[in-house]
Amino acid sequence: MKLGLGFHRDRISPDNFRFARQAGCTHVVVHLVDRLREGLPPGADEFCFGRTRARGVVWSFDELAAVKKLAHDEGLQLEAVENIDPSFWSDILLDGARKQQQLESLKELLRAMGRLRIPILGYNFSLAGVWGRVEGPFARGGAIAPAFQPDHPLQNQPLPHGQLNNIVYDPDAPAGPIASVSREELWQRLAGFLKTLVPVAETEGVRLAAHPDDPPLPTLRQTPRLLHQPEHLDHLLNLVPSPANALEFCAGTIQEMTNADVYEAAERYSRQRAIAYVHCRNVVGKAPGYREAFIDDGEIDVPRLLRILHRNGFDGVVIPDHAPRMNCDAPWHAGMAHALGYLKAVLSMNGAL
Image 1: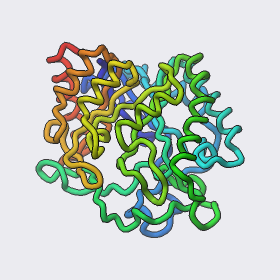
Image 2 (image 1 turned 180 degrees about the vertical axis):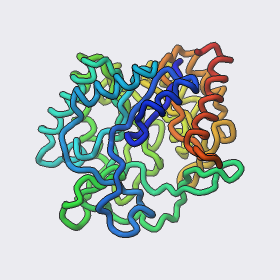
Image 3 (image 1 turned 120 degrees about the vertical axis):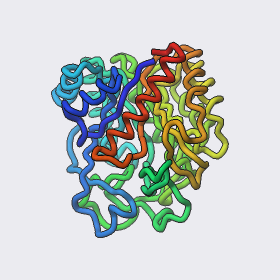
Image 4 (image 1 turned 90 degrees about the horizontal axis):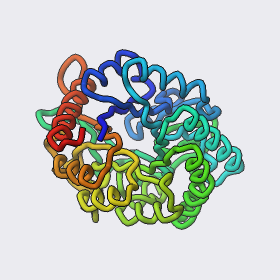
């Protein structure tokens, strides 16, 4: 297996990539979605962590090449682009008038990734997205970490026009909620997305990697969630059977699922060669109430999990997608250094590095 680290756009820099290499990483995953918070109503930051970016075209070959070169210059390989900007695929998710245009743009993105040999595109086919978590002193020693609590004041409020996947992508959208959609219709939209893009991904040597819903609830913001139990992952893989239709195996999210056994899931999907890469974080509790923890301090036996993956031949990248922020001058870096050191030690002990 390969040790990696994920970076949002605002953390992509030579210094941060050098930090990853110093911590033992060989690979990086990048989130190129802008994380701006401009143009939101008062209080939106506090309650929904909304973010705004200008509507635009899909990331270009040159943009991706620049990030890949930045990583290469620091001794790292770019393994995945994670998450699709809502302005790139809003009408795919909503079945809008620009759906075909957006599908063609995503085909071009896959072709650019193929030319650059970036092997994975991670995505989250969700309307509400990762929404409603709060941060507080929930981890060991009062370290700051996310948690989800079932009494969020906006949990059952409808999703407004211009906001998807926890991001305000169109601040000029008309007022009012988006149209309601059934779970069956949303599955059909996902099936159409995969049937259109998987053949292109196969040709380009790119894997589409689906992230399960976090929080793993059946509904959120009056929208259905498709991947909130392990059997839903099976259904997604069966929609378009292909090595290019794969999973972004998020151990923390799967552990949070009410009916999930994270070790059984790791066993099943690693045997199927269905895992593109792994998010490895630890949690305490199940949906609808859980908190994140240090990698060595939650309910997941991380060494057991990684042994299963290694035994079944998984040789992809493992990243600590989140880590509690520690009390020091560089809280994020310290939390990630702790997680990376732990993962590197476990992988080395298993003979997986």
